Length: 262
Image: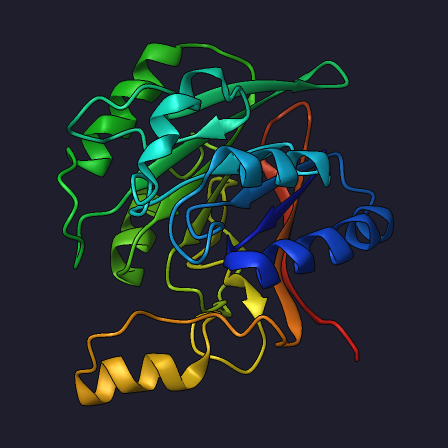
C-alpha cells in the first residue's frame, strides 16, 4: 500500500501546489491513498469548508489538522459531517469531529490519527502519549494500517513518541514546523518515521509566507500578520510511505520536494 503524505498546506499557493503536483506524484509512485495536513489551508491559518472540499476534489483522501484547528471557527458548522477530516485526538475541549478515522482502500483498512504536541505549544491538550495509548488499547486487534500525524514543534518530542509506539503503528509523520527534515527511516520494530514532512506553499519565503512580512514581525516586532505572496513559485514537500498490507509494517519511507517551474 503506497501512501502519500503532504506537509502543512499553506494558503492558496499551497492548495495550487497540491492540485498541480498530486496527480503527477500519484502516477509516479503508484499511490493508493493521499493525506494532507490542512491546518494552514485558509489564508495560512485554519480550514474553511470550501477549502476542505477543494482539497478532497483535487484528490486528497484525508485531511489532518493541528494547533490552528479553531483559527476559523466556522469549522464547527461542518466538522461532524466532514468524514475525511481528522482533528487532534488529545484536545481538552470538545469541538466535534474525530481524532482518529478509519478508511478503506481496495479492501485494506487505513487508520489516520492526529496528535497535537505539548512542547512550546499554547493549546490545552491532554498528554499525547497517554491519549494515544488509550486509543491503541481501545482498538484491540483491529487489523489496519495506522498512520499518525504528530503535529508538534520539538523534534525530540516526536522522536520519543515514535520510539514508544514503534511496532504498534505503521508510520509516524511529523508536521507543524514547515521545514522538511532529513531523517526519514524505519524504526527497529517496523514503524516508518520522519520528524517533519515539511510544507506545501510559496517557495523562497519563510514557512510558506512572504519573507518580509515574517521578518518584520519576527525580527523587528511589527504587529502585522504574516502575508502570503500569491505570485510566489509553488512548492510541495511530501513523504511517500510503502506499507506491507499483511504485516502493516513500513517497507519504505522517503521525502520528496518539488518546485513548479515557471
